[in-house]
Image (cartoon, rainbow, N blue to C red; front, side):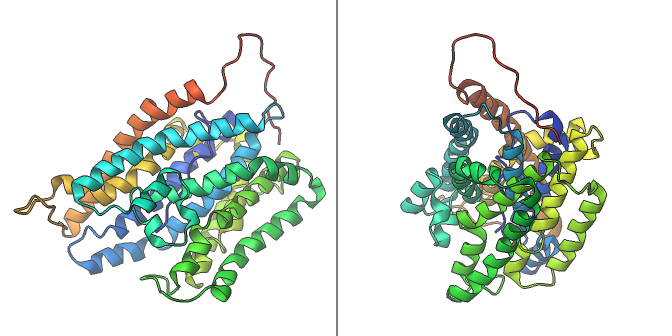
Amino acid sequence: MPTTPHTAHATSPAPNLRSLTGARFLALLPVFLTHAAFEGVFTDPKESWGFLDATGSAGYASVSFFFVLSGFVITWSYRSTDTTRGFWRRRAFRVFPNHLVVYAFAVILMLAAGSVFDAPAMIAQFFLVHPWVPDPLFIDTGNTVTWSLGADVAFYALFPVLLVLVGKIRSTRLWYWAGAVALLVVALPTVALTLLPDTPAMAVGGVSRSQYWFTYFFPLSRVVECVLGMLTARIVLTGKWIRLGVLPAASLVAVGYLVAQQVPFLYRLSAVLVVPLALLTAALAVADAEGRGTPLGNRAMVWLGELSFAFYLVHQVILAYGHVLISPRDAHGGVVPRTWGTVGGIAMIALSFVVSMALAWLLHNGVEKPAMRRWSRARRPAGPRPPAKVPAT
């Protein structure tokens, strides 16, 4: 199922990246709807599958966008005064406080739902190493969306080395390297289909579980998209951008999405859209950096974008387990699975969205921001600090 990482941004958005902050929340909507379709809240299974078909591969496209965005934003905001230790500290306190709070919340809901716990899978999820295991049980348990945090953690661990390597590339060759990395993203489904067994098969997609895992969940496969984001950021920062506007870039994404619906399943996950998404990311950043801005950078969208990481973390557990709180119980106190008709199913999805937004606001303001303020930077003696350099396009 598609999920998406959203841990690229700082506690407050960089002034030059307001549109990308707003774009994060907009990109989360297809992810939420796709997860809602997977939960099968409708009485008629055909309605659930129809809802899933209606979402198409938009959720998967959003996931690819978030990994590209992660590499782009972190490279854009990195300063020469940053240290590897300081970077890892900020990333750790950016990810783990929210993750651990929602992990505990998911365990409580799972107990209320009478779900069976798999101890190894839950322990692996606690430490965010579960996407390294090619077993669907390690993904489809607890707060399932945290697989992407595991991929993010892998990228953060490698980022200091990757930054040195990307920084050594001459500006005149950045586009060539970006093209080569994009081709590597395209090649990953081919590698999976060629080298990995085609059984056991998944219920959707016509591919095996191992082929799907390697293409979609394997952290190193997603790190490739992060590297493309890093290269795109360097292209902009070194003045090698091709001046592609936001509207033309968005049009390329729309065309790419239509094309993606016509190709085999694994190729529509990232391969077709990764280049248009990287171009759109850069176009939005340039528009903001040059003061032109976009509607995605208005105050409301930025506020929603700031909630995106928290919303991402809570929405799946609400969709998967929240309904048990209003489900009837049998004579032994067990939960009786309950589904709704078309109107009721849509109402449940809308209610889940509202509840997720409320919990995201609480998580963002009660955990995320305080944790970043208190622990993301080592304490130092008071004294004058040199001004940070602002990257120019």
